[in-house]
Amino acid sequence: MARIWMPLAKWRGLIDGTTCPMCGDQTADENEYSFKIATLASGRLQLQKNQFIKGYCLLIANGHYSELHTMPADQQATFLRDMVTVGAALMDVFGADKMNYEILGNGIPHVHAHIKPRYYGEGSPRRIGNSAGVCHLATEEYQQRVEAIRSALRKLETNQHERPKFK
Ligand SMILES: [Zn+2]
Image (cartoon, rainbow, N blue to C red; front, side, top):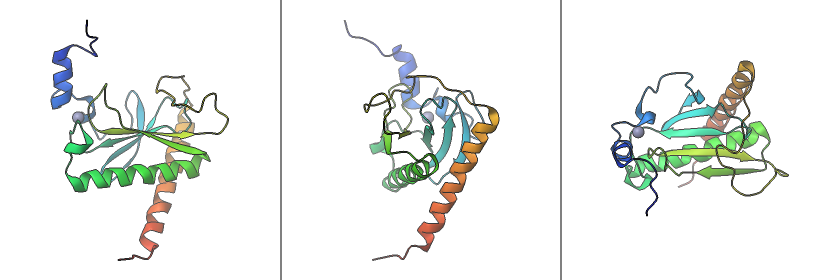
């Protein structure tokens, strides 16, 4: 017998976006799972409340697309560029040794990237699942991380504008 991910009606609602939780309120500074860091050109950047992976963020694309390849090409490129810019910022802020990017969407098929800093010497060099462990911080520690990431993103943005353009 085939294993099911979830009831088919639920899956269809998530795929077509009618019941997609990532299409819900996008203005809140905080939700059950995360704090908003910034609104980028391609979507919103959230700091996960579970900081078991130090610096773990989510970039959630604007608009409901269940696949990266169904996004308009310019939006797709902007999303990927934003994703790696965030990776550079997180590496800088947290002193990570490696960045991991995961675009899965099997649970919530709305394009989003799990952006995970990794640190040399962690238990395993393999992928760390989103629920591998739990680490919650004090409110001010979340705010410090949010501010540090915002500041690193601003710095990168400034540098990009100053970089000479080649044709
Ligand atoms: Zn959605």
